Amino acid sequence: VCKMEVLQHSATIIASLAAFLAPPVIVAAGVVPRAGPLRALVLGLSSRLFLRANPVSQRTNEVAALRLCLSAEDKDFYSIVTGPKGVGKTCVVDTATEATFGVVSVDVAPGKPFDTILTDVFTAISNTNPRVVEPHDSARRVLRWHRFIFRTPVTVVLRGIERKPTQQFADLDGAAKAMAHNLGIRVVIDASDNSLPENAKRTKREDVIEVDPMPRSVLESVPELSELLSALKGSGLADIVWECVGGVPADYLRLFKKWKKAGRGTGSELEAVVEPFLTDLLDQAIRDRDANVVANPRLKELYALFVKQAEVPHKLLQESQLARPSPDKVLRIRRSPRGTSVLVPANGPTAVVLRFALIEPPALWELKNILHNSQPLASPAQ
Image (cartoon, rainbow, N blue to C red):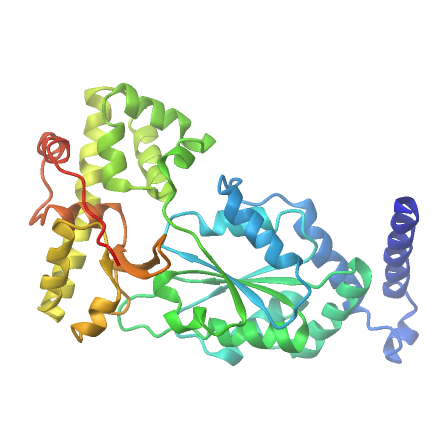
């Protein structure tokens, strides 16, 4: 049976190639659309044959969950992979879609409207120049040929670019709904918390996979970080870096590059790399907090709660008639193990800044003392 399926599949591909190579007069007559089968073949095979730029994700649970979502046949649903910036969302998506036929990735800038997103997607699918050829009809033809040849729909990954203050949300969820429902495309939205409105995750048409900062055990299993983590541990810096950076592999990779550039030294040489790196992270977190307080002085009361608590009930915002800024670089919403929504610091540096109410980044030795003498934070009962 398996051999028969392989032969049938091969025959389909050969037939498609034959269609592409058909005489121009037949093509001109509209019997065989030349661009459709060739582009479908290239699109389908390229994502199987070419290696991805990102490393394999160590988040086995999230990867398995996304693969399960993509295997479903319900065309009205799409997937959202979201979480803080730098925690490895894109690695999860790339690992889950590895060796998948016909994966198309499209970057979506903040504020981009529905119709522009669709045009960008159709252009990527059809590989046409929208100034010369209208991409919608070409893309629909490629989609039909792809499903015919590979027996599976095209997968489109919409990668939301990080939104800055004053920038509007892109209509990622609207475009995803249209592509999934009207065209049968498998759609994955890869976007940070600040690039996707909260109500986009509550339309009942999406499968949401929340990617939180990595647990320390998972971070320590990332092969690309093993050399740096070993050096940090040997120099007595592993704990302080973990406390300040948290489970954000992108920041560890940035630290690794700085350490590599400095010669991969240990002891005091490594400290000379770590101290300015942590100072920059904490300084940015302090500036983000202070900017929010200047814009809304009442936020100072909310931030003060994190001196003794690791999380704050989200309902407190409504009870206090307090609005978070958008985008919010200081706090994010997370689902607690109890099933309720809570506010937590947006990242590791912000957690340290709020916990110790820092006014300016301390020196490395002072930071060590602060963290060493601190008491565990409480999580309030809901």
